[in-house]
Image (tube, rainbow, N blue to C red; front, side, top):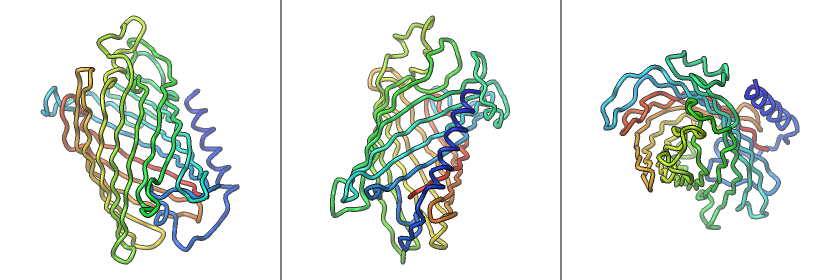
Length: 304
C-alpha cells in the first residue's frame, strides 16, 4: 500500500505540473527538438514518468545456454525532474527516484502491479534517489551532452528476502549524441553509459542481517552502449528501432555479465507540453545467469 501511495502522489504532481505549464510553440514538437542530448533553457522544466515491466521465463546458465525458470517479473517506475539553470542552456540539474515491484515463483506478469511486499515471493518499495546534473561541454556541439547521477539506495535491507534492487551506491554518467538528417525525417541517437557500483562484496555480507543477493553487482562497472534510429512520419510522431549491448565488468566481486537487447517503439506529441512513449525490448542473448526476457514500457513526458 505504501508503494501505491508513492505512485499516486507522483502521478498527482505530474498532472499538477501539466496544469501550470505554459503552452509555448517553438515551431518544432518537443519530440523533435528536445532529444536526450538537448539541454533545457533557464527556467524550463522537464518531468518524465516512465514505467516498464520486464518479465522472464528463461535465463542463461553460468555460460550462455538458455534454461527455463519459473516466471519472474520486475516493474520499475522512474521519475525524472530536471530544470535549466544557465542562461546559455548548458547546465541542468535534477532529481531521479525509482519505485520497484518484483514477483517470483511463477506468478502472472501483471501480478507485479499488486505491489506486494513479503519475504517469500514478492518485494516492492521506493528503492533509490539520485541527484543529477546535465552538461553540454562544447558550445559548438549542441547535440552532445552528458548526465551524471549518484543513486542512493533508500530501501530496507531485509535478509533472506527476494531481490528488490541493487544494494549499491551507483555513480552513473551517460553520454548522448544525436544527428538529424533526411529533411528532418530521420534521426540517429547514440548513448554510452558508465556506471560504477560501490558497496560491500556479496561474499563479505552477513546472511543473518543482510540480503546477499542484492550485493551481486557491488565493485563492478556497468557499461551499456545503445543506438536508436528514428523516423518522423510527422512533426508530432516518431517510430524507432534500437539495439543495446551491455557489459558488467568484475572489479572485485567475482561476478560479470553481458547481454544484447533489440527493440522498437514510438512517441507521440499529445499537446505542446505532453508527449507519450511506448516501447518493447527483447534480450536476445546473454552470459552468466542473464535473464532472456521481454520489457514493455510506457512513459509520459511534460516539458514546459
